[in-house]
Every structure is written in structure tokens, then in C-alpha cells.
Length: 115
Length: 114
Image (cartoon, rainbow over the protein chains, first blue to last red):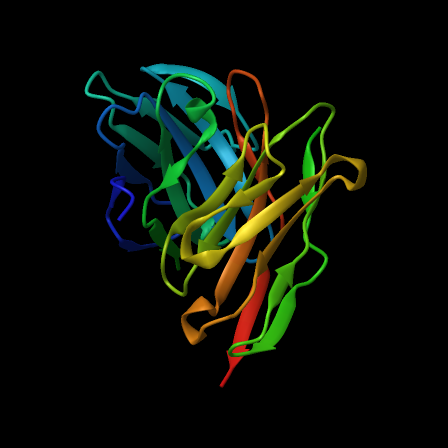
């Protein structure tokens, strides 16, 4: 158990819908990262927040957005869902300070299935 | 841009035999390097990391990895594999900069024969 929690564990929805994935980082960690794991794209970085502010963006679609709240939990919002958005979505967190800032601890993931 | 290559998609090894997983990276400076393991239906667990210093790093579960700058490699090894080591292994490189995203290789699936 990494200490990072993600809810829900599984999500099944239809095309065109909107869903919200939630992540709580480890106690004391200020950074939250979101990754997508799919069969064709592998593990890809989506976005990072540090203490409430967006820090870095990867290959995140415009239909996707995220935020980090004052209590440091984060939400990833996926809208206008397509079949290709079906994937495992991971959240990770890392502690402040280098080099530990670079060590990311992953949650168990949310498996999204779009039908 | 940083990238990671894991040349072996699948490796089958007998229980008790040694294991080596290859990882090559591309990065403009000295990177931070990681190996993660993912068991079926599970999240990613950090096996070991390299930040600086000794190029041979020890990790959990009896794994070790060696950073070779000249070869841009960070291969993972285990002297004697257990059936519980069957999983998918990912090598990752992290940027030494703000906004430290991890770039992952495609993964190597390890099957352990009894």
C-alpha cells in the first residue's frame, strides 16, 4: 500500500458522458500526477499539480481537465468520453524537496470502461 | 525529449534462475531513473531508484540495477527468481526539473516457469 488512494476503483460509462476520478495523495506530499495506461499508448503522463497549482502538462486532451484542492486531493475530469478513453488512470504523489521530489508513489488506479 | 526503451516485451525464466531486464534511456543530462513493477490488476510499485552516487543500486524484493552512463542503460537484475516475481516491469526516467514527469518504457512482462 503506497498511501495514495484513488476512487472509484472501476467506472463503466457510455460515450459522450462525463466522469470524475478522485485521488488523495500520501500525507505530506504536495505534488500529484495523473497518468493514463492503455494497451496502445502504454503509460503516459497527463498532468501534474504542486500545492494547488498546475506545474506540468503532458499529452492531455482538451476534453480532460484536472485540479488540486486546498486539502491537496486532486480530481481528473473526463468529458465527452470516447471509446478510446477506456484505460487505467493512475494518480501518483511525491514529497517536497529534492531529490525525493522526483520519487513518485502510485495509487491502485481507476479502470475506466467506456461503452 | 526524454525517452525509454525496453527492448524485451516478454521474458520467460525458470524459477531459481537469474533475471536481467534491459532498459535504455535518452535524456540530455544525468537523469533520475526508476524501475517499477506492476502485478496483474495492481498499481505500480517502486522497486528501486537512481538519483546520483553509486551506480549499483539495491532495491526491494532482492532486485538491483546498474546505471551505465556510457551505454545510457539502467538494467534490472535479480540473482534468483521466485514465482511471485511474475509481473510487468517498467523502467522510467524523470527530468531533473520542476514539473518532474516520468517517461516510461513499454514494459517487459516476466513469466516464471516452475
